[in-house]
Image (cartoon, rainbow, N blue to C red; front, side, top):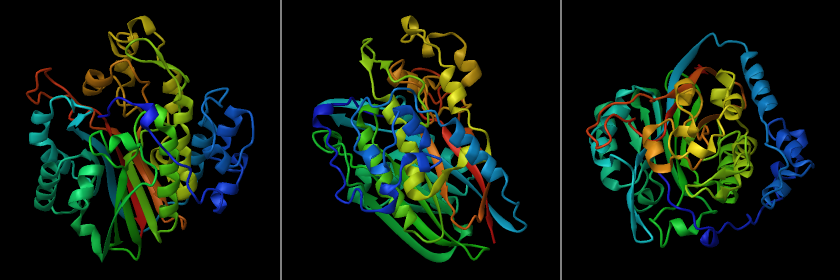
Amino acid sequence: MRWLPLVLLGCASVPRDLGRVPEDAVRVRDVSGLAHLGEARGDDPTVAELLRRRPGGFTSAPDPTAALERLHAQHSALPPLDDFVELTVLTYNVALLSRTYLGTLVESPDIDERREVMAERVFATGDDVLLLQEVWELEDARAFEAAGERAGYAVWSGTGRKHVQHGLVLAVRLEHVAGGTVLGEAQYGSQRKLERWPGPNVKRGWLSMGFDLAGTSRRLTVVDTHATSYASFWRQRDRQARELGMAMAGTPGIVVLGGDLNSGPYYAREVWLDGEGKPVRDWWDNAVAWSLWQHYGGAYDALAAATPAADVQRGDAVPESWERYLEVPYGEDGWCDTSRGEVFTGTDCNSLYWQQYGGTEPPARLDHVMVRDPERLVRVVGAGVVLTETEDFGGPEGPTELSDHYGVRVRLRVAR
């Protein structure tokens, strides 16, 4: 769940150390995951110059097709592991929001009905690592902690004061934790300040849990984050990607990042229409952060590594039925029948998402799992969009999904 943007009060200062690390100085043409950004701008900036860019600098949609294909081919070419431990990782925005924003209650649909079952349902998936967002209230965090402990997980939701600002919960099956556990909690230097005050007391950040992976000699750190939302605040997201990416790069061993990054790899159109039919720009700028998480973190998109990602093909197929886009998802009856759960995690094809944002945002893969594996000890052997089913939770709208986002699950093999 998000809240209405107020651009004038959104602030994002340039990082003081921008230009001082090697990753800032490279030219985008020399980085396979960034080259398409320079091509879409028609120039060749350094990464630091890209971060300092003004809006509207793209002349065409940044198209990551070549980068996605190259990533999948490179990962597929890695030799299989003979001896490994297998883990499933689920990232999931659970949409438990009920707060006041500028004097108005902002609440996710069917929140009471979904809240009653959410923690049990999430742990019932049986995934080894759970990276959850929008567990905003302490009472909900405590419910997840209790459910996780009953199910045999180590659960970390951060400290009380900070938890209610970032709303994150991270859980790992105890059987995979051999020892050496280190817990981390941080908040980004770049924030949309209005979210903190007079908004709903939100200050974005991340949680981490580092541990020795049982049955192996490997060190594994899992990281959970929820980046700033709305296309207009791409500056904050870019700088958050840089900050967390650099933290990942400085972490020894294997790092797995998951979360609602609020940035898709691809948007076919720069302009979408809001609920009043007014143009909203910045969607091409919103695609940049996806590349920056990988660049600064030395990481790769796990879904794209496992399977040819369909972001561009499905993004290009989104109808332009503007005359009906507030009436049915994407203005075309039946379009969701062929795209539901295929690649998009934030989409009007999700009935809860439709109730909140219907027609006002393009669909995108907003939720991601990324892997930092400098020694090539990990293989992604499966990945996909999950938790797409509808069910009657007793809400007024009838059967809905469990959350307004779909989840992303990846299956990893880690060399012993």
